[in-house]
Length: 205
Image 1: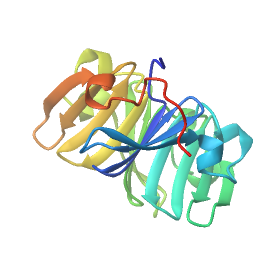
Image 2: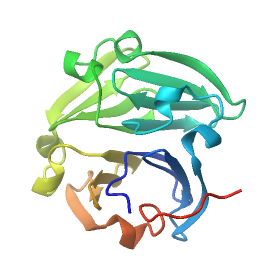
Image 3: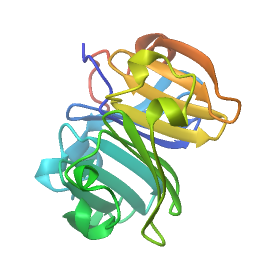
């Protein structure tokens, strides 16, 4: 069984994208069921080889605008046409990120093009990609004042549903958080809330 979620893309509660190793698991969170499960390279057939396993972060903007991050690079992808829009260094697109973030990130929370959450170590940078400017930079524990100590550094994945519903993953657990009220909604094992994501299962046709 896999030990962690590498990345999470939030489309809506019934359409979530989990990345675990070389797998992409398309998931219905409302029903707690796997919608589709394939190797990343089979789900996104034109994606470069380096993004086909162990990605660091993923952002879902819309079906034609997906963002894959690994190391100091990102791949901007059109899944509708199955084509790479561009593949570049993080520093070339997100020019105002702190230097260490340009070398690689741990997780990304996608709200919209003007409101992105880049996470690395114990820090989070709130970023406006349209204007290429940092909106704020804080420690995770300062931005989300009630998150448990285990989630205050080294997140594996981050999902932004709305300001009252944030999903932070680390190891085999996740923290579901209300940032508006600054309160924990729940902390649970990933396999309890999202059965089938970390457990090995056959690929779907």
